[in-house]
Image (tube, rainbow, N blue to C red; front, side, top):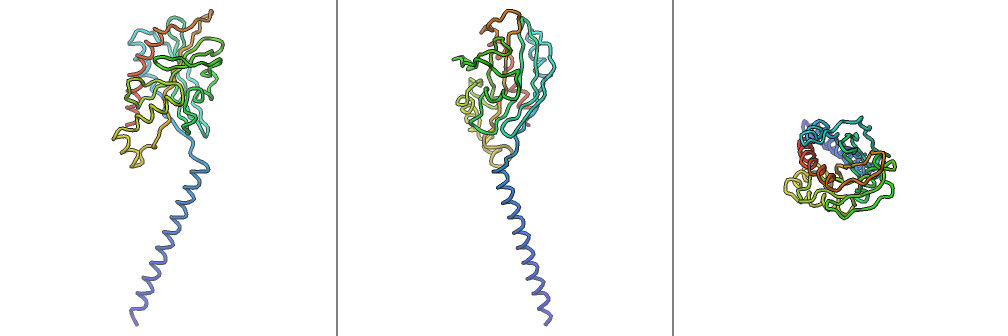
Length: 233
């Protein structure tokens, strides 16, 4: 007779355990459905303005910081604050980290949509290298490209969805990246890059010299890759 209470206790315990598992499974199912219907808004880290300023000034560009533009985001796009500099020779430089949730939107034309100061009018693509887009911002000639800081390819700049996505795919082939993805430390694909824009601000509109553009990019590449890698550790 004394065994019945113990057996009943065990039965109750198993029933409670099944109930807990059922509740957890239901919560997980709801969370999975919610992530499909209402996915998390993308997020990005701010740029390290101090490191970028030091890199530009060390190269003799005499970069005078401008007032940053506020970070913005919606369900499909997140941007860092847009940092800017006034450079010699009447140039204005702006940089912004942008992240698209969808691969289809991963291009400079979409990444700049939340900031009128970065939207190119009469936009055209240039053959490069490096690949870039050219157009007008506030009726002044401007050049844009985007740096995929995680890529180790010889060319890390691109402007179109096809080229930027290819750089992201290449970056995800590394063993370390695949391991981080498997354990959930990062997403399978990170559609993020650092948009760089140089604009002429002289009274007389003039195209930006290619040699000046290439010099700016060559100085920014190591600085941006270094600060991004430090931030991701």
